[in-house]
Length: 216
View (cartoon, rainbow, N blue to C red):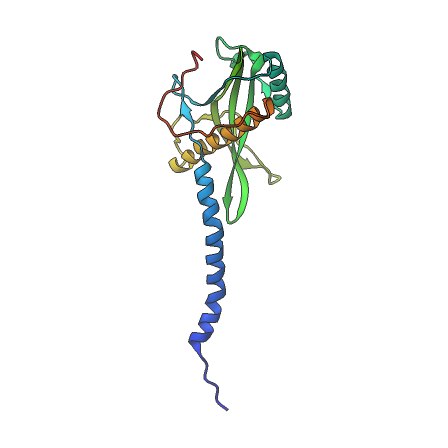
């Protein structure tokens, strides 16, 4: 008995499952990627040309001392450290200044790993029935693997986000700046919610205007 082998049919059966899986992943990943792109917040610059995330919150019913206490509790919860004397900008009180960091993660071959961290300083002030806060002094520190396979900072000195990327890829550096903006907005939303549960975060809008911290 003679059987005729259908090469086209066999090829179709071999390729179709992989093609279906590819289309499925494309349909599920693409909306997510587009959604993440929409959530990217852009940092602005202050009068000194430094990146800044700045907000003023008006008409707060809670007394200033209560806001300060809750701010201290939030800083402690986030394990944010007070600034040292040599890092406090002139004219500002260190009582409500803290330093923190954002972890930057990258995905390669479906696996995510930390590629660096962004250090920042935060200033919080109250005045009458309003308060303001801002994040600035952003610095990037790349990670490297240690001998145990852990991702750790490769240096103790960060690179200001305002500087050119240098050896780093310009597109990659732009991603770091965008990630700093996104995480700053998320931090701000959580901070305001902690201070006042009724206070809702307002979305940032892209703007080229200069932010001034001299008056408010």
